[in-house]
Image 1 (tube, rainbow, N blue to C red):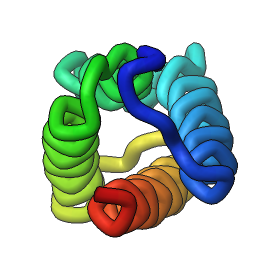
Image 2: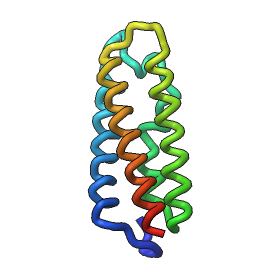
Image 3: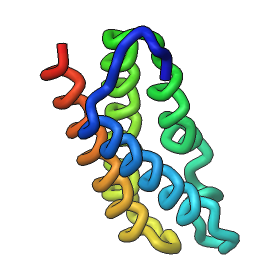
Length: 116
């Protein structure tokens, strides 16, 4: 984060949750299994890298924009996992983790918008 804008304690706590969500999603995604999600969804790299986008924001508006973009990426990935009719190792756990990430990003978005 850049020192050009400040974040609240609640935002900091939520960022910790987002970081955890990304790490856990990455762990589930990276499983070495023939039916792992990694083999099917190479495009999910954005979910894994999205946390870097938001922590590298320089202004409040850039932060909000990056959180919104990250939220859209997570929504799309979650939709893919929910709708695909293929047996994927840990599919329900991945969906649950994406749901957690989506919730925390929504909380972060709300907190950032009330801060302005």
